[in-house]
Amino acid sequence: MMKSVPWWQSRIAYQIYPRSFCDSNNDGIGDLRGIISKLDYFVELGVGILWLSPVYRSPNFDNGYDISGYREINPEYGTMEDMKELLTEAKKRNLKLIMDLVINHTSDEHPWFVESKKSKDNPYRSFYYWRPGSVDKKGNPVPPNNWSSFFSGPAWEYDRTTQEFYLHLFSKKQPDLNFENPQVLAAVKDIMTFWLDLGIDGFRCDVINLISKTTLANGKKRIALTGREHYITQPGCHKILAELRRDVLSKYDCFTVGETVLVTTQDAQALCPPGRKELDMIFSFDHMDCDHINNKWFKVPFKPYKLMNILFKWQKEVDWNTLYFENHDQPRSISRFGSKKYPQQSAKLLAVILFTLRGTPFIFEGQELGMTNATFNTLSDFRDTESITVWNLATKLHFPRWLKMKLLRATSRDNARTPMQWNTQDNAGFSFDTKTVPWIPVQSNYKEINVETEQNQKDSLLNWYKELITIRKRTPELTGGSFSVIYQDKEVYAYKRSLPGVGKFPDRETYVVLNFGGKKRQIPQEVTAILDALPEKTVLASVYDDTTCLPPYGAFIVKNTDKNL
Ligand code: TEU
Ligand code: CA
Image 1 (tube, protein in one colour):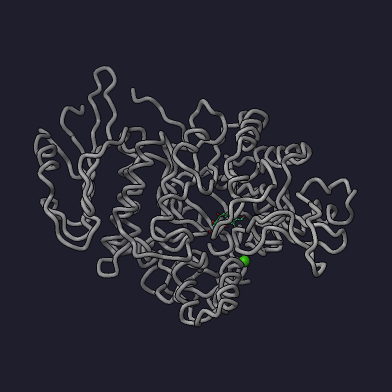
Image 2 (cartoon, helix red, strand yellow; image 1 turned 60 degrees about the vertical axis):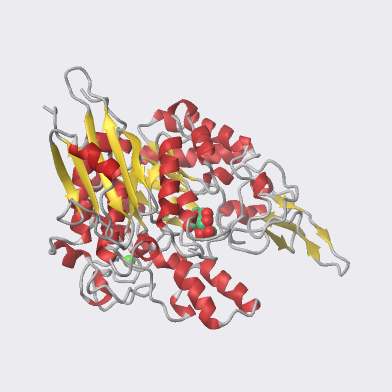
């Protein structure tokens, strides 16, 4: 009998960005009832876990990653009754649902912060990092240290009322919580318990490896994130995660996936193995950093081998992790890693990689359709606070307009946040009333790229995703199997996933061969030697009909069907 794997390893996950998924009441903003109306879409796609980006009360400065009410639903998205109905309807369909846990910071409109800024001796003052700073020769306030924010600029904001600064690693409307204060950890445990008792199945933990600041001393001056050596994956972070697991998470059949910036494979090994009892897996960023230098805004031409080398490194060095190419912060993978000349084939190749490596695959809404980067023409098309901040900074630096547009078009998080494309009606069917204008412009290619059209096209990307998800779920070695490289050069890659047979059950072996390039390639003889030696084999899926060579962006999956009973 196969060794059973936890459900969060055997299922495929799907990230929903609620604001952009489906608008049921025609106000141009996605909502919970819109998601409920689409649950059967997830069942048909074959995913088993839904990750719901924040739907809590929020001023939406950072689209919900700035929470002002952890136990309330943002009225724009619906009510707590809608949330409960979503959970009930998801469970009826055997869909697990995890929520976004954003505890490194709150909104500056959260009652804790509103209280905290009233006076230095307010009981909530130490829920946040307040420090006096100093003054320069002209009497201007100077921040307590030289740390910079993820969204550029200083990581401190001066409050004239109490004449102190507060720390914010992200926007000034997202003050960092102070986990040195035991009341903060206690309050977080209560929030997690509230949602787990409501019936959710776990959490995606936002920038969770930043929550412990070892010291507020100056950091080494850097182009970006000065001060990061004092808060990235600090010892205190491990301590907090272990306590949350011990006191809350261990009491439920749930899992956690931590979004962890600037982590190495060693960090992953210190955070995730079962014995660590901290996180179950993480979203790392190494592979997301393969097409820029130092900072995501400074793009360099994409080289497939850079992406593949990083993916293979993580496969070899981390036992279990997430597999993802997109989320609500990242440009669309087809625009970033795909080929303009072979868009469909390169998108299918990326899907082969996503569903045949070892780990839990995460799909971001619209990725399964091949949704592309936005074709925005003016700054007014953009919504993301980070993008607007970067535009303003570039303006101060006298960047020409064309260069500012180039920067935003290539990197803006809004690339991922345009409305989900459901059909060919106006606004792509995002709102039930096709005349409604969505909160952010719909992509211009929605008439070709949408669910309805692709459901009716046999060789569409959507049907390819469904096919690969079915194959993955039917092939145990693609889930619990080991990973080993058979061949690699700068375009052609071949690897094996295998599970040893148990008792009379034979070994299970599945091979993947791909050409991540625009020129036809022969299958290397090292690979043909192995495949030809299989007494019996079955091609489970192939981007092209011909599997005797590797056309541009060709990829195929072949199973050793010999010995199997
Ligand atoms: O993202 C943290 C984060 O590191 C990314 O925002 C990314 O690094 C950023 O775009 C700068 O490159 C999480 C959420 O996913 C993001 O949406 C939030 O804005 C952020 O945290 C603050 O909560
Ligand atoms: Ca709505």
